[in-house]
Length: 453
Ligand code: GDP
Ligand code: IMO
Ligand code: MG
Image (cartoon, rainbow, N blue to C red; front, side, top):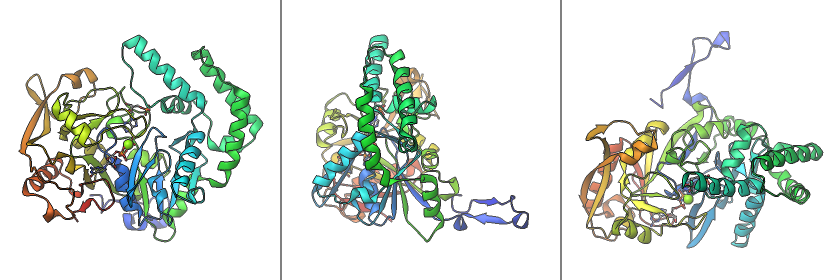
């Protein structure tokens, strides 16, 4: 039970045998995570919670993410900046688990500044342990995609933001971090050149103007310097000081997780709950609510298995009605029925305490609505989510069919405003996953979120 989990302290003999409960381990962190293949509406859920948050953190991913927030009719898209940056009263933190493309970060900030988001640089804190995505990582991302296409006849369909190559550098221990950039620049330059050489030996066509890159990086370093802190100590103080509301905004989603997603058609970080701990330096004991965000149907950008995909008029209708176009790449998103097998799988890993079900309004015009409830292999139901993509391509989806409500729900603001058939659809989902649905989304803006409890 999440609320009553306790640990025994053995390091201090006087305290040995005593139970330390969650309540005295410091402030609790609320985590918002994608429960499908991304673009579930995490930005919108974070925005809703961020109005009361003191700190909003990103813990993984980079500017492959694209989070939309609509406030007072104005639409913002965030990629590296936590969506909480919109709230002038909260601090935003980019944690050690994030990979940062500095030109991308400042471009995003300046673009939002022009839209009226003033003072973002003063509200942003960047962990000194975060790794840097260089321009050449982005070029290599493109080269790797071309190579995959040539070798295997298919690529991953990455965002080409350099995410895979930057996390590869991190894992091979040749990556460079924010603290390196702000340290001795001569030393940084040597390591940068070595890293470039390493990639050039793998990709001989890669050209890098090293001097020009270093000149630009030096300029970025000075602009970044005032925002940089020891992220671990910052979090420690936030957790153990006076009561604070701390929010973690997951990027990407469970099925894109490097360990649990539909590998190799995934991103390169942990987008599940563990990523909040490792990407910020938060003890598991400080994790409070874990909110899963799921669309009332399913979408996916890029390549990879998608058992409930509808390559027909239904898929087209969901795509056009839902404006299902990637925020980062502008690609059309693939669409299909809600797949509860994957949402349940995401729950097995994340232990959601509640779910936000978004975009219910998109289903308003359908005569009937299907929901994937189980996978069958050779005619037999399987209880787990297959690791092997060949197997996932072969599963047969078992559906439940619901009558459509054929009513506009976009003006609904409370549960009782929803048609009975929509309520029935929502209750079925809730019972099937075994997690309460806390919010139902019926439109893009802040107020279009029905709160259930
Ligand atoms: P994220 O990456 O999870 O933050 O999601 P995206 O911003 O990439 O995609 C979600 C899209 O759906 C955005 O355009 C949102 O404005 C929109 N959206 C979110 N919730 C709702 C909803 O309940 N109804 C409708 N119609 N649109 C929504
Ligand atoms: P948000 O946070 C949807 C997908 C890409 C590609 C795969 C790998 O907005 O939900 P990468 O560039 O990360 O190496 O690409 O992952 N992908 C996303 N799809 N939403 C995202 O983020 C995504 N981040 C990565 O389309 O298939
Ligand atoms: Mg998105």
